[in-house]
Amino acid sequence: MTSAPNDLAFLRRLRPLAARELRLALLAGAVAGVMVVLQAWWVATILDRALVGREPLAELVLPFVLLFGIVALRAASTFAAERLGFAAAMRVVPALRRALLGKLGRVGPSGAAALPTGEIVAALSDGVRAVEPFFSRYLPATAQAAMLPVGIFLVVAPLDWLSALVFLVTAPLIPLFMVLIGKGAEALNQRQWLRLQRMSGHFLDAVQGLASIKAFGAGPRMVAEVGATAERYRRDTMAVLRIAFLSSLTLEFFSTVAIAIIAVLIGFRLLWGELDYRAGLFILLLAPEFYGPLRMMGTAYHARMEALGAASRLVALDALPEPVLASGTARPAFGDGIAIRFEDVHLTYPDGRIALRGVTFAIEPGETVAFAGPSGAGKSSIQALLLGFVGPTSGRILIDGHPLETLDPEHWRRHLGFMPQRPKLFAASVRGNIAPGEADPDDSAILRAAERAGVAGVIADLPQGLDTAIGNGGRQLSGGQASRIALARLFCRDAPLALLDEPTAHLDDDSEAMIHAAITQLKGRRTLLVNAHRPASLALAHRIIRIEEGRIAVGQAEPAETACPC
Image 1: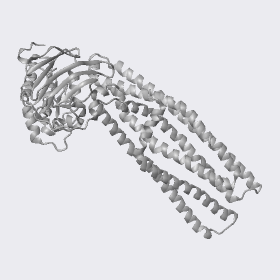
Image 2 (image 1 turned 90 degrees about the horizontal axis):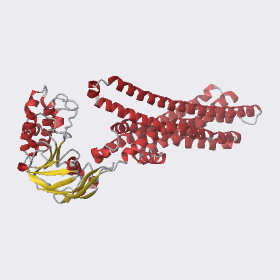
Image 3 (image 1 turned 180 degrees about the vertical axis):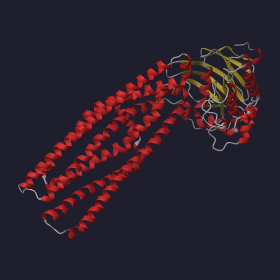
Image 4 (image 1 turned 90 degrees about the vertical axis):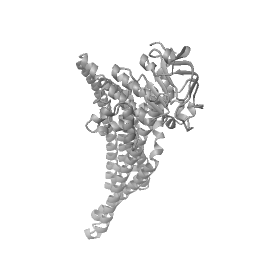
C-alpha cells in the first residue's frame, strides 16, 4: 500500500492545475473575512446607538443601509469563494482523468494487466471523483481557517486581552482533536477503498462471466457473494460515518464551550462596568465567527482523508511502468511495406514471466510471415513489442532501419493495422467500428473496405446500413461477421504493416475461408505478420517462423508451401 506522504505529494502535484482558481478563492475568502469583522462591528455599533445612546430610528437609516451592503458583500464573496473552489476542482478532476487515461494508453494492455480491471475502473470513476472535495472544500477551508481566526484575534486583542487569551487557549484544541480523530478515519478510509475495489472487481467478473454462471447454475451463489461483499463495504462506510459524526460532535462541543466561556466573562465584566457595551457585543458576535472556520476545516478534514484513500489507488495507477516506445519522437516516412528486424531481443514481463529469449529475425517490406508455435511460446509477445505495449528487456528492434524506441508512438501506430484473435467491437455504429476515432470518416472508403472484407452484403441488410448501432461486442452479429467487420477496419486503415493474431480462431470453415480470401488481397502489397496454428492460415505466408519457449526454433524459418501442419 502506498504511504500517506506519497499520497499527499500526489495531490499537491495537482495544485498547479487550479492555481489561479485557488488564488481567487483565497482572495474572495479574505474579503469575506473582512466583511465578517465589519458586520459584527456595525451591528454592535447600531445596537449601541439604539439601546445605549437611545438615538431615534430615523438617524439609523444610513447605518442600516451600510449594514445591508456589508451583508450583501459578505454573501457575494462567500458565494464566490465556494464557486471558485468548485471551479478549481473542476480544473483538476477532468485533467486528472485525462492524464490517467493517457497513462493507460501509454502502458498498453500488458502494463495495465499489473492491476485488476475492477481496481482500474474504481480508480478512474470513484477515485478521481473523491479528489474533488479536497480542492473544492478542504483547501479553501484550510486557507480560511488560517486567515480569519488570526485576523479576529488581532482585532480583539487590543480591545479585550482576556477574550483574546480564551481564543488563544481554546483554538488549538479543535485542530488537535480533529487530527487525533482523523487518524482513525484515515485507516478506515484506506480499508474502505480496498473494499470498493474488490467489490468492483468481483461485480465486473460476475457480469463478464454471466453466461457461464447461468449455464452452471451458480447464480444464487454468485448473488450471495456479491451481496456479502456489498454488506462488508456498507459496514466500512458506516464506520467512517460514525467517526465523522464523532469528530463533528467533538468540534462543536469545544467551540460551544469556548463561546460560552467568552459570553460569561463578557457578561460579568459588563455588569461590573469593566467593558463598554459596544466592545463587549462586538467580541461576542465575533466569537462564533472565530471558531466557525476551524469547525469547517474539521468537517473538510474528512474530505482530505477520503481523497488520501483514493490517492493511494491513483498513485498505483500512475506508477505503472511505461514501455520504452513511449519516449520516442522520430516521425519517419514509411512506404507501402515496412522492413522489420529483431536483434537478440529478450522480453521479461514485470511479473517475472520470461516471454522471449534472444529472438533474431528479419522481415522484408511486403513480405507475409507466419509465426507458428504452441500457445505461450511468445508469438503474441512479438506483436505486443511492435504495437508498443511493452518494451524489450534487452536487444534491439529496427523499423526500416530506425530503432523502435526512437519512434513517436502515435506516428508509429498510425502506420499499423491490428486484428486480434477476438476483435473488439464498440457500442457504436458500423461506421464508427470500421473507422474508429475518425472525426469525418469517408463513407466511400468504408464501403470499399467492407467490400474487400466480404461484409458489404451484411451491412446492406442492416436496418440503417452504416448508421446501425451494433452494440458493445457486436451483439447483433455472428462471430464470422464480427471478424469481417474487424477485417474491414484493417482494410480501411490501409496501414503498411498489418498484425493478425490468429484471425480465424473460433470461426467455422466457411467464415475462415472468407477471412483468408480477404487477407490474400493484402499479400504482397503490405507487410503482414500472422500468428497462426491452422494449416490454412499458415499457407497464406511466404515463409513461417517457428517459436518454441520464447526462442526461434532450429532452422528458424521455412517456406509456407513446405510447412507441415501444426
